[in-house]
Image 1 (cartoon, helix red, strand yellow):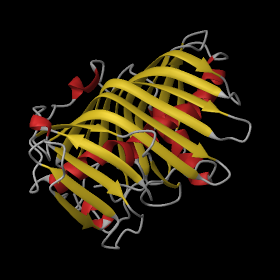
Image 2: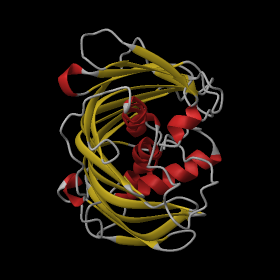
Image 3: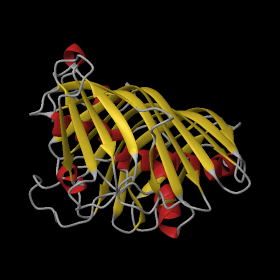
Length: 334
């Protein structure tokens, strides 16, 4: 299921989620079992799939999911409230949370010797253990809930940390295995490694670059991995305009294989941070024998029938043989 194209940086909700989710993106010292990165999850088949008119819609939804989407669809998960609104960009929201709360953790760590356990606001606890110089550390989470209705378990390790509270720059390397549970949704497990670079100016406009070799996600009946990935996000604070570009290979159980996904600086995904979907953007997913699907975003209305154009080049000759318009709701359901 594609999720909300939403950051809400500076809002109370965003700060709460960031504090909670970063607190989780920070340690590998126990509980998570992700020391080998996505080896903690059974990977989907990674053989490139042939893109056809029949699977183009699923390929498109899978291609967008890691960067502007989130976890998997919930409709097949028994016992859950499937009327709940889609989550925000679950994975990138989690990664962004690193840059939010880690600066505070870095500052606090230098006044604490050894591991320190903290009770979480709505139950559970987290244990932080940082080096004396604040450049590395671990956080382990035990059913930690700092936001009502959201719980984190697992652990994260961090190395090469640079930055401080109130500073304009933050960077670090992370390895993690965490499970994030939100009321109304299936538990979302994220396993892998990534590096983050955050730069902000005096107007609080921020850019974030996420890179890594392998990151996996499992929710409900679907598992997907991205490899050799770069996801760049840029938020203009005054207008709350969010721009996203991304490049990676994504493999998924929904595809039973993989496709390589690219965007460009000339055709980024862009829209208001408060919107459920982006308003513009183009991505190309390439599969077996150079077969392709091109996804062009024409608007962000969730139900209008002409918001996403999907074009298919099934024979890989560079010419798109078919073009079909879809509402976002159709992609959201996958």
